[in-house]
Length: 388
Ligand code: TGC
Ligand code: FAD
Image 1: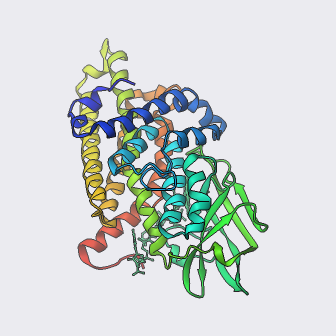
Image 2 (image 1 turned 30 degrees about the vertical axis):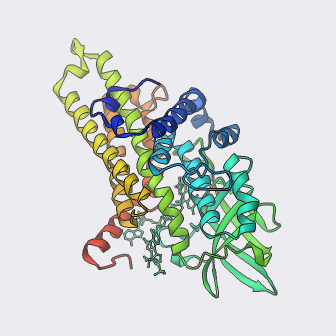
Image 3 (image 1 turned 120 degrees about the vertical axis):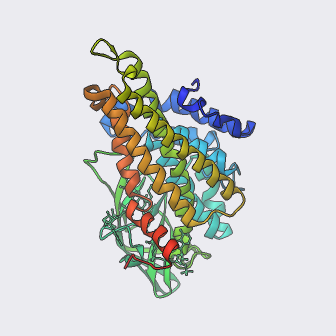
């Protein structure tokens, strides 16, 4: 777990506190000792290692940006560094922390009743339960305002009908936070997954995020008590507030994947020979590595800046869009450049690079596509919405 040249050259480590370094070290140890040894095979076998859930809970990494109910109350940089180290091993485990901690747990913490929080947050924080978050539908994810899933009143109860698509952890979750249209606008529902009428089917045949689970969810006259609605969530701004937390974690996470690709490429450039000398001694290889390194460091500086804004409660959705758009885009470029340095061997599972490349294709799509974040920024710059 020693630091590589890509981490030390610019000296960003000096900007971290002891506590932040402690979180980073814990995540790095977990990633290198638990995830990395089997991840290539897990990716190939499409294996989600359920046993890691409680381990991440014991490390305090689930909903770690929240306070109370067994959560760690860590600062934004610490949360970011955990995402960064987990994603350096594989996006699947940063995604797990995002879905459980930032989406399902944030929804409960920000909008839940005391009873809902007490029922679910301690066990989600400990990793004794799994939570998922259903916003996207089969007809499209970029425009959640067009959702078709509907909750109607039946006496005091609610009856849920519809479906969701791409829902992380859906088939292993104990509780689902489901967003639905009602006569009163979009509301959120806390749905125990053993409720009759709830069905989850894994989406198979993925070429990305294979060590992670995404599902189609179906709700067939699923009956819920009045107490299942999230009392404080009204309108789409509620799920969007949870997305802000998860998107912030992605800003950091993808830089972890980028670091791993860069490190692999630097190492390879020292040992691989062509035309009688190391490929790292060739100017074209150095150009690739230097450009990648500069973008990596800029992404890290942006992450650190957004962390300071988040801790000051001043981080805006537009600022998160700058981070998500830039860092995912640059991580993809860095991974692709590293792959070109590894050339033929780069497409094999002997190296992590192609796995990161494939995973990052999911990341550019979920939590708002490149196009959506571009349009968020376009709207902020011109005061003209161009979505519709
Ligand atoms: P719009 O009119 O802009 O906004 C509706 C209401 O929401 C408020 N709002 C926000 N509030 C908090 N945070 C944000 N980021 C917000 N963005 C908007 C807004 O102020 C308004 O409030 P109010 O009180 O006036 O009603 O809404 P729109 O329908 O025009 O949509 C805007 C758009 C396109 C940006 C939005 O729909 C969007 O973000 N689309 C992308 C959807 C998305 O990201 N889905 C992600 C699903 S979860 C997932 O992918 C998990 S991946 C696994 C992992 O994270 O690892
Ligand atoms: P669409 O919305 O159909 O978009 C198709 C294309 O059109 C995209 O390129 C898009 O950018 C473009 N487009 C759309 N609108 C515009 C516009 N106005 N202008 C220009 N271009 C536009 N969702 C959840 O709710 N929970 C989860 O846990 C979850 N996990 C996920 C995990 C994975 C691995 C993946 C792949 C997705 C996950 N999602 C989840 C769904 C994800 O948020 C959506 O895939 C994403 O929001 C995009 O929706 P879509 O795939 O339906 O594409």
